[in-house]
Length: 197
Image 1 (cartoon, rainbow, N blue to C red):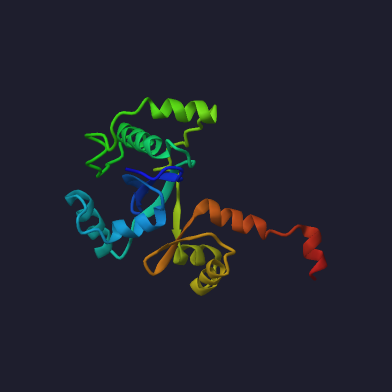
Image 2: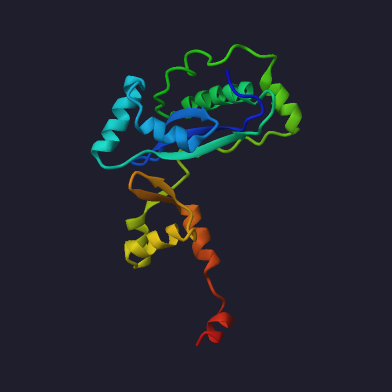
C-alpha cells in the first residue's frame, strides 16, 4: 500500500475552459502525477477523451492542490479517505467528475476511522473552500495584454521567479491571486515615486 510517514496531497484537474474540476486524485508528488495524467494511455475512457479534446485545442488542464495530509503513520489511509471526501463533495456541488475508482468503490480497506485519527491529531481541520469556480487562471498572453506588455516580459518574470506560475506543456498558467500579489509587491508609494524622479 502507501509509504509510511510520507506527505500526501489531494488535487483536482481543472478544465481551463470553464474552470471546473473534472478529476480528483491523490499523490505523494502531485507534479509528477500531473504529467503522468497527460501521458496516461491506460486512463479511463472519459478522462482520456477529455484530455485528448483539450490537447486538440492546444490547452492542458490546470492543477490545483485541495488539501495536504502531513506525513504520519496513517497518512496514506487518511489521504485515501480525504480523496473520497473531495470526490463526494465535488459531485455534490455538481462538478462533472470523470473519476471511476473512488466514487464507486473505496481505494483503501476501511480503517479504524482514519479521518477521526487525523481530526484528533490536528485538533481542527480547516477544509479548504471548494475552488472549482473561484480560481482564475491566466495565460501569459492575457497578462501581457492586460498590462500592455510584451509576453516575453511576463515570461522573464516567471523565469526569474518573480511571478509564480504553473508550467503546462510549453507555456505557463498564472493564478489571478498570484498576479495580484506580484503587482501589489511592486506598487510604490507617492513618496517613493518622488525619490525616483
